[in-house]
Length: 115
Length: 114
Image (cartoon, rainbow over all chains, first blue to last red; front, side):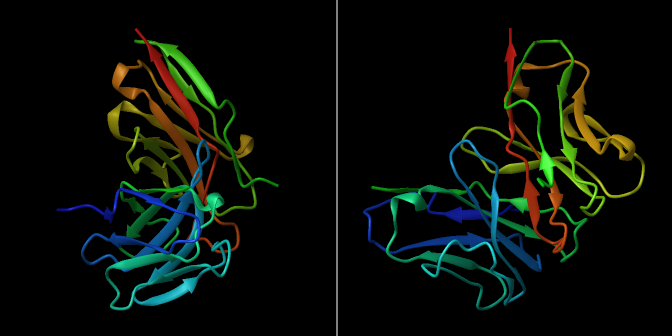
């Protein structure tokens, strides 16, 4: 079946613009995660959902970052008033259940460049 | 203290040689460990995971890893490197308090020379 998809794959924004990044998880997966990967570093956790409930948003860097999953499927990560330090690859992952041993399946990521 | 540490940001091996990528974890994290591979401009793909069953775990593409509690290590190995193995490899563990989110190491870039 189809894997996790993300759109757009690449996004260039001017500083101060708002952006919205979309994630389509694997069908039927309960859990959805967002990670941020800066250049040359490992992914860092941002937030995760179980169905439509956002259970942990402790990794969001500032109140400019907002994520939602209103119907428990597709998720959107929104960044308001983008700054240069927001430039990174944003990875989405989904897992069948919410359990530390369950495999997280990753999408290809959205590369955000803020000029 | 770091939850997971990968020694060596870059590793270079010749085609056909042994691949050894090192990962050490904090003893305070839940005993589940993951290795992911990332090819250029792609997302992460699971290579293998340890979930408290057999300590020697076999994964895809001929990779394997051994969980050694006494050494708090989970090193990734492959007997014979192939050109297609060139990629970045990440070791990950569940967060020590909130296990559903993963904590990743800094990654090791594997270069395979012909």
